[in-house]
Image (cartoon, rainbow, N blue to C red; front, side):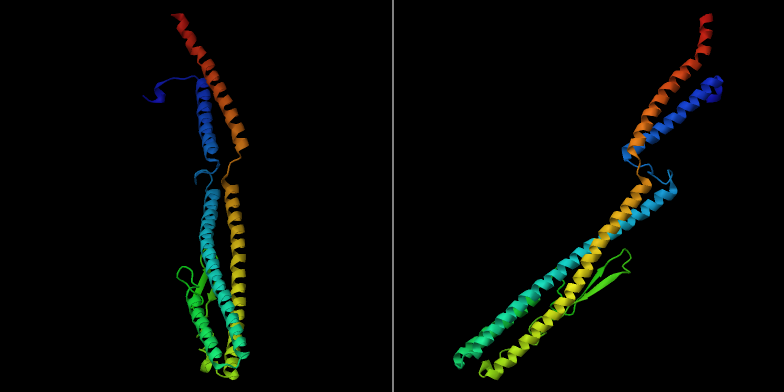
Length: 272
């Protein structure tokens, strides 16, 4: 049966329409209160909805880049730990060379040369053990690429170097350190190796500073994007709570008004 089959007074139809509108507003307000958003779909506000979607998507993409930056920091940190350990070993080897220079006993010098060669082999071990998750910046000229933005158009390449004995030009003890010249020759090589390590440490430190700065910047950008998206979609909970109270009151009054509008028709029943 269609609504046209039922005759309603003008007052009742007006009150009924007002009740239907109030019910729709109640449903909308309840949705806003439950979700915390005044824009829940493109139907609510297409411009704000899609703008917020784009901002949240970019924030998500940047969050993924943050993970890559964090991993890059660990990789560079592993390299720095390796350089620190290798530098310590070379300084220890220089101490052994100084001890060899302080004696003229060839047997003692030969033993000290053997100690030097042992340290030299440990440099190779540390160099090969300074990797992080399969990437070692001290075992070859591996390149660590760190992407900073969502489309990878902004990035940084951290280039490794060979920090083992061969890469640092640290050869075996010359002639078992039989002469002072042999010792001073190897000592000069150790000084050059330390200089090389310091130079590369400075480069790594500069790259690490760039990465950590971009991490901080990315955190700020993510916060800005998420705040912007919230500003476009979040509801004012105080206002929506007040709206709910007012709509409930309006609904109650509308029901009462509809009942009063029907009294004229109900009076016909008194004739029977």
